[in-house]
Image 1 (cartoon, rainbow, N blue to C red):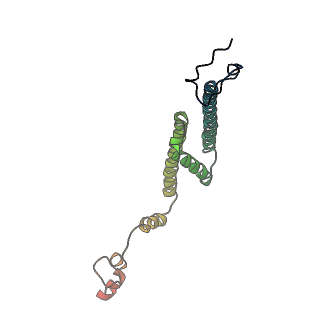
Image 2: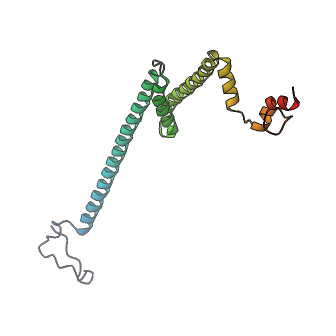
Length: 181
């Protein structure tokens, strides 16, 4: 049996009298609002979950790309000592330096791997410079050594040639001629 209608004084003016009891069969506005709120909350929860999955997937892809870059740097360094030409090592040097500049973007494990390669490249560069200096000094004549010695010096034409005694710029050879020797 349907509930008895409320007294006429307590009824809202917007409500109509339910003489057939149909209001009990129709969902009330409050229930509809609660259902809409519940559905909205469920949709928000599902959207947050989807967003988290998407961000995780994006991070996984980005991490995979970074890992591939680290592997390529390690592989390039593997060929570093195989080649005998110094100019072929330059691209590897540049690659390692560029990746090392962005070290903070990588995971700690990837950063350690990059750091190891970077240190190895720097050691190789130092060794190459030392070997180049030794080879440069080994097979040179006295003229070449003197040439490299004086190439970096600042020499004044007047004082260096004349020995300091003559300041006229003619040098020692002229000084002997003047004195009659």
